[in-house]
Amino acid sequence: MSKFKKKGKKGAPGITTASLPDIVFMLLFFFMVVTKMRDSEMKVKIQVPAATELQKLEKKSLVSHVYIGSPIPKYAAVMGSAPRIQLNDQFADPSQIPFFIANEIEKLSNPKLRRAMTCAMRVDKEVKMGIVTEVKTELRKVNFRKVSYLASDAGELE
Amino acid sequence: MKKRKLPPLGAGSMADVAFLLLVFFLIATTIETDAGLNLVLPPWTENETIQPVPEYNVLSIQLNALDDLYVEGEKVRLSDLNQRTKQMVLSEAKSPEEAIVSIQIDNATTYEHYIAVFNEVKAGYKEIWNDTALKKFGQKYDDLETENQKVILKTYPLVISEAEPSDFAMKK
Image (cartoon, rainbow over all chains, first blue to last red; front, top):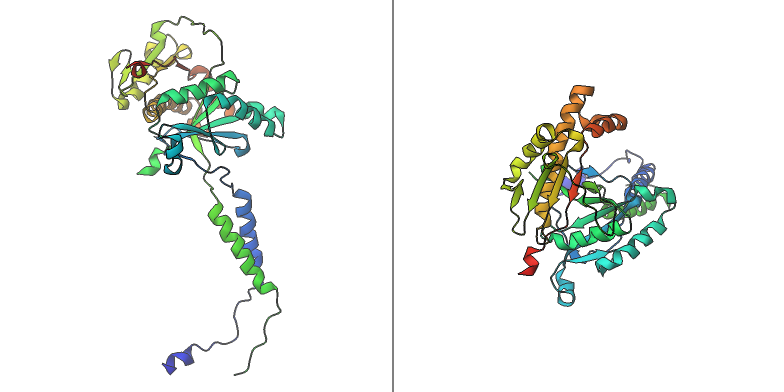
């Protein structure tokens, strides 16, 4: 026992840790910049389908999310288990889409970017197309025509 | 043993504070960007005018409520759709510019199958684009400049027309 204790005795500290905060702050700023807070609590269960021909959505500020899926168990008692639409953090009907889109457009800093805006549809695999078509029709009615069906990369699964 | 002098206060705990924040942001970060299948919806018109298109220019795909896939009225496997698309665009259509892919779905079609079909059609076109890009510019389509991509897209535009969904399942 005492043998070990003797060995544990240290000499003068080797490396100065003065620059450690700098390094950590650098990392910190990096993550602060790349972080996107999950802005809405998910109230529907969504497992996106897999696909191979994916294109990345570049500008996050220009993307509006529409979620469609079955309500999670917490809300299933009230909302039922049929697929529902979630906009921001509320359940919604297809008829609320125009209002949602108008809001999203208002948030834009530069109105010229309106045409670059995309509606990302995060839809659960099991959802029937009826509700998806309704959403698409509403989007067409407000002339918001860029849509992306979010999917996971099929190549990554294997 | 002689007691060593303590370092001046303040700077030492700075690292801890920064680490704490760092860990928080590490956890909160979702770096992966969303990726998806892009499309542009057709403009909305009150009463849809149906433009007659010669049948040989159209690849008509039907997905029924039971997720069966029909191409030109014949039942096909999903894995063949890719080749079928290429065949239509390159040989059956009068010219590739006039080729149209028509997807007719049912309200009860599952989203997963719809995406699978959409993906296969895109994959078919992607192969055509890649072949042309390699021939013309010696590069894969994705590596091309936007202008060159546009050149290819002009010859082989991907036009997907989505007919009004049928409603068989609901009527039952």
